[in-house]
Amino acid sequence: MANELPYGKEIDIWGLGIVAMELFQGYPPLRVADCMQCFVSMAKSGYTIMNNEAASRASEDLINFLYNGTLKYNPADRLSADELLTHPFISTHEHWSRCCDCLSSFMKYVLEVQKLRLDDAG
Image (cartoon, rainbow, N blue to C red; front, side, top):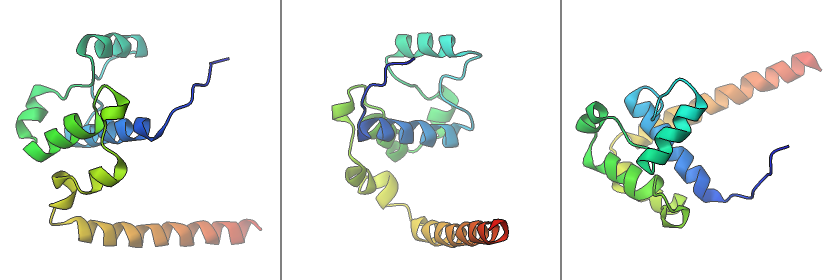
């Protein structure tokens, strides 16, 4: 049985950075055939690195959000969720309000569908 070590919010911040990088690149960072190769790649790089082609298309704000905010090697050095919300990559994006409205509508729809399924099952 695996030894369950406690972890804090910092790992969630790192996960956010990984997801953001994957969404931007279109595939996971350090994409490899198996887990062992992934561990070797991570050990060699020290942390997750965006590929050169994707990095050339990335905004300075995205690069800063990833490498100076979410993917810092030392978990204590990562920005908090509150700090990330005020980061220029998030705070200066002109379409966030529309995105949030759309997400809110979608979540209401999902909850309605779940309620209907529960009503039908019960």
